[in-house]
Structure formats: structure tokens, C-alpha cells
Length: 597
Image 1 (cartoon, rainbow, N blue to C red):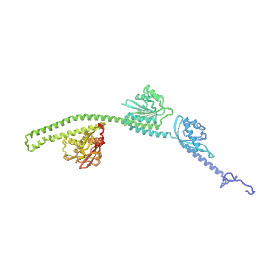
Image 2 (image 1 turned 135 degrees about the horizontal axis):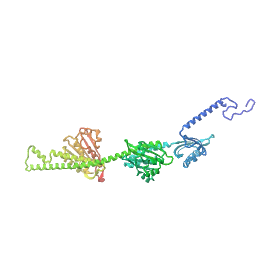
Image 3 (image 1 turned 90 degrees about the horizontal axis):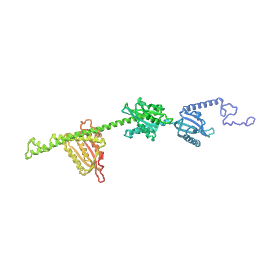
Image 4 (image 1 turned 60 degrees about the horizontal axis):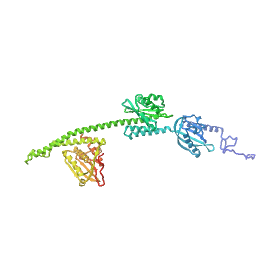
């Protein structure tokens, strides 16, 4: 009530001051200066938002409830804004793309909740992959007036990921095939799957011309690929010649018929290039250790295709791996040829050496036989021959002298060296036969011991064999296991002092035969024990003797029989070499004879 008793109505705006009151306290109208200040602040905020939006490398848009575009921010847009405002997705994108976009946006409108999705679109003939974040747009009354969409083009990022995976696939392809041609195919297939429509390798042959190896994305173009591969390219021709000549990669974003005519080998080749119809090309030279091997060519067809600098960098990395594959194949061919030449040489030398060795051994044995006959004649009448003459007769009776023993020992050792070389050669060539038979252990060991004694070794040899082991039987190649024992005994003789005894101990346990050869030699340093069975390995202080193959061959033979072999040593006091062989049991069956170890 006022002073006259009339009722005064309050403002309809909560907290507002009475009309005409210019005071700015609580319950009062804001001053004009405050309004202007708020307006300026709002303008500043809007300007800040505009700058932020302008700097964002994404597409921002508003669409009303009919999904017509009402506002668009699209940096570097391939379409003018006026061609978008007022239109729907169906009027801008391909039908299937528009259907997918509409489906997602309608869901946001009806569910009143945001949504993220990944959608492919085509604008001005170029394909894009977009990550969308869509939120409902609220009106002044809190109702849903439309949607807001943030679209980020991830085409480049996804392509970079695919290229990284592609390079990984190419690297893996190098280990998936030993054949060079198959390796190249394994490299090119992922390239055409991810990067190009056709991948070609133009490989130099004797530096004069190039042959083509090609893979096409379309598996139905087999006849076309075969025709392309039949072309023999001369210098100055072919899609890869420019990169070859300049020794650096080339990128052609637009390829026309004029260019194809300039690189065509002949009319037939030009027809093939026109059928390929490349619109963009990358060519990278294959170089390894400064040697030019050829060039890799990537071609893409179809409208809107254009290779980028990133694609060229990927092609350069892939080509580096292809060049490595080519070099590996060359080195493998060289190695195979060298192994073949070596095996042939070893075979010829072994044959040529064994013939005179056989003559030497036969002559030595004939001399020994004559010596025995002479001793028999001298003692035919039972008369004793005193002094040194008696000693001579004893030697004659034994059928040997120091010289004959040395001849037999050296020739036997030379024969075993030749056998080691041949075995090493057979192992490299995958020809290392093991002919297994059921053999009694006592007989197996006795044969090896007797063979060693016939070599006239000056070292006493002691055999210790358990009764259980003597009766044991094993599946083995008698000659090969004899070879193992001979090599171990030769090794013991080689590193033992003169007249030092060598012991062969044979026992059994855990269903296997255990053989130990012990010597009293210089021993092996602990750090060297793990290397003694490696090919050509010798200790640093060991005088060069033999081929360095004997113990490695022992290991291969024993393991081919399913056994184990190892060594223990007492430096300065001798070494023990052990090997095992599986014993024959009632349930055991003979392994396949003639198998290759």
C-alpha cells in the first residue's frame, strides 16, 4: 500500500527493481553501463568461440529436426557452404552413405542422447573416412531443436596405420618362403591389397634389359599379368625406367596417354599399359650395396586416385625390403653353388686320396705278414737268438716294427679324416643315412676296440663293461656308432701324454646305454666345454690337428640315434666324454632304416 492506500504491483521479473528506479542494488534494475558491459562480454565470448572454431581442423555443423543443414564450419571444404546450407545428407552424399548418416542422426534425435560413429563418405570423387560425434541441440525451451555434429577426417591417419601394417607384412614375407620368386609375390600381394591396384618389379638381367614380375589386385586378370610379365624391357622403356635412370623414386599424381606412349616398349606393351590404365604412379629403384637391381612400380587406376608423398615414403621402405630379398636370394644361389662345388671337390679329393692310402695300408700289412714269416723261419729249429737279435725276432713274430706301426696308425687316421669330411658334406646336403639294426652292446664295443688296437696306438686301452650292459641290445647303425667311438678314442690319444692309459667304461641305467671315454690329457677349460662339439672349434692353446669335425660328427650321429652326448673335464688332469643310446625293450620297435638324420 502507498500513502494514498493504493496497492502497488511488483515487477514480474523476480528480483527486479520498481519501474523507473535506476538504482543498482539488490532488487533494482541494472544500470545502462552494466548492460553494455554484459553485451561487450558476450561479444568477446562469441569472438573467442569463433576463433577457437576457426582453428579446429574439423567439420562442425548444425541440422534442424528435418536434418537440413542450418550452419556449417568446414575448413578447406571441397564444397561451397551455400551448396550445403538448407540441404540434407541425401542431397550431398552417395545414397548408401546418406542412408547410414541419416540412420545415425535420427537415432540421436529420437533417443535424445549423443553418439559416436565411423562413416565413409565420398565428396567430389574423393573417398574419406570420418569419425563423427553427434549430440542433440537444445532449443530455448529445453526441447530438441536439431543436432550438432563434429566430423573429423581420419583418412590419412588410418592410411598411415595400414601402411605401417603393410610394411610389417612385407617384412614377414621375407621369412615365409625360401624361393625368391615366391618371396617377391608375398611382398607384392599386401601392396596391391592396401596401396595400389597393380605392383610390378622390373628386374635387371645382366644390366642390359629388365624382366617384369607383376601382381594385380583383380585375381581375374591372370592373362593380363602373364602378358605383362612376358615383355622384355630395354633401356629407356618401362614405367620404372625414370626411377632407374635417376636412381631415386618418382611420383606421378596424374598419368595420361602421352606418358604411356613415351615409356611403352612397343605397340603390344603400349596396349597392355592402356589396359592397366594407371592414373597415378610411384616408381622406386631397388638398390643394395650401391648395386642397382631394378625398380618397383606401384600403379593405381580409377577416378579420384592420386598417390601422396606418404605413399611414396611407404613404397621406398617396401622397396628397400624387396631389394634385401633379392640380395638374399642372390647370396643363397652363390652359397648353394659353393656348397655343391665344395661337395664335388671333397668327393673327388677323397676318392683320389683313398686310393693311395689303400695301397699304403695293404703294403704295410704285407710287410707285417712277411716279417711274421721271417720270424717263423728263424725260429724253425727252436734255437734261441741271444741279445738284440732275440728282440728283433720278437718284433718279427708280432708282424710289426715301429715303422710299420706308424704307417698303419697314420693311414688309419688319414682315412678317418677323409670320412669326417665326407660326413660333414653329406650332412650339409641332407644326405646322412643311418641304417639301424638290433646290436648286442658287448659285440658293438669289442669291434670298436679291436679297430682301434689295429691302428697300432701306443696308448694302453682298458675296457670296463658292466655285466648288465654287456647283455644289453640297442637299435643302432653299427658302423656309425663305431665311428663315434673311434673319433672319441682318437681325440683322447691326440691330447694324452705318451703311454697314458685310455679307459672305455660301459654301463646301463634308465633304459639307455651309457658309454664313457676317459683320458689323462691336458683337460678342457670350463668356459670351453659348451663349444667342444661345434664344427671347426678348437681351444686357443690347442695345436692344429685334424679337421675340427670329429666331435661335431659324433654329436650328429648320437643325436640321430635319439641319444645324448656331453663332456666333463678336469683341467690338467684329463677329460671324460659321455654318450647314451636308447636300449631295446620288449615294447620298442626298430626305427625306420635308411632314414636321414
